[in-house]
Image 1: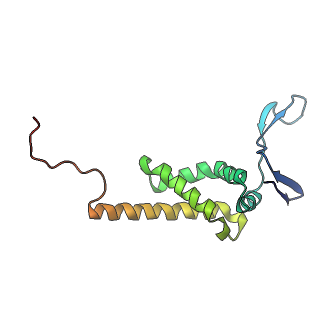
Image 2 (image 1 turned 120 degrees about the vertical axis):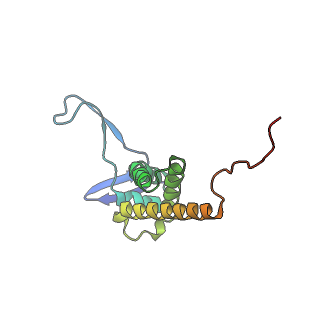
Length: 146
């Protein structure tokens, strides 16, 4: 699937990730070697992801993965649940892109999904603790080992 859009007079075509370029030494003002190119704007990526482009979804994940991971760590510092929270947040966001009204507000919308998902996990954990279902119970057997 190919998605094309025009933003600020630039035409973005999403067929393969244009992430890096080799810059020769003779180009003034640029460091030589491999340089990271700026990707398409969020609005272009979100619109392409809404149309089902898997590369655009991966690009959004790569762009916002550290942001979501940092936000999730501040809300839920338990390492055992951190990866699950990040994954659940991205799954929720990428499957409900049709509910996103302003494509330019993707980062704040994604942040609200992370906060909501973390609060659900915290509520669920507290409920399980009240019910006595959390963690592994130690054996209360009085038998002595043989």
